[in-house]
Length: 393
Image: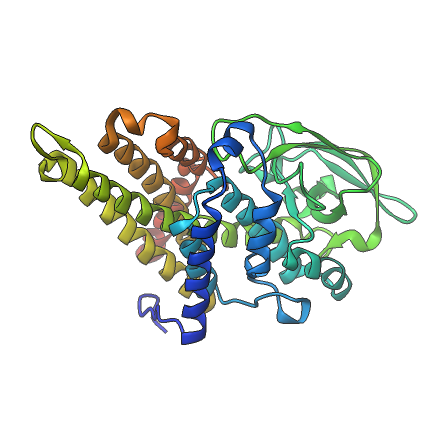
């Protein structure tokens, strides 16, 4: 099976579902995103509606109440949401819930863990978070300091996690911790920890520039005791689970942004067709249309890359560099198109009412989360070097 013979077609039922999600996004956009962004408020009402539409449980097996969507259907639905829904922060919160918490439990959890957590996570009554990042350990997951010591009944966790997306609203956390320091990265394990666990302390909401409606905070573990069955996968399998999780997260978390890119290009074209300067519409100015052309190219290439990555995932062919390409290109395209849209709209684009300054703030976050653009470039370059070595042998 070739890696470039890609079939993007959706069945009639799946296409109908995608259109339902697009309509849902348009309806939810009527809510006051400007005020919620300014206050940094997470919308539980919108979350419930997204969950009722099946989005909170996209990858979850039908046995546990999920949509059991293929990667191709998942990204199609999420990009359709981004096409019409104005709350980038809530879409990011949904992505963190899906790909960093729900998906790993679905893929690596025991039957007991799946039965306990997946139905609530899929129907949106529970919100998930992944506590991995620490002050000294971001993309370098092997540098974490949080430890889990064995007890008579399970494990005792101690450590500090930071920049944990969804932490202020989450009901369950996946927590990476060192269980065997002498084994290096093979000594990392991951635990499923309920919010109500004694010793788990959630810090205040971290104020940030963009994605403000996706709340994040520090999470402290102070002699936090969990039972033996809180372990996700085998003891010492944490790095393998984390790597597999990041592969999927980087592949799919920016699917909504693909829809946003289409919306920015269309919005800018519509504005250029009505805005007049020097007695003519600015859509006749080559400087303006060149920017719109660049926006359309970014949108089209991001969409093609998104579907290719989804197809590679569904067919078991995806590699780390594939996911890195998707994450890099879509993030950089978001920043470039948000900036172009603001320039096309001029002074109005700089106002809060235009909602483009928020787009630019949100786009900056995309360059950072799930591994910065520079980390993605390193992954791609490393894969290229490895390929050249293999060819030389």
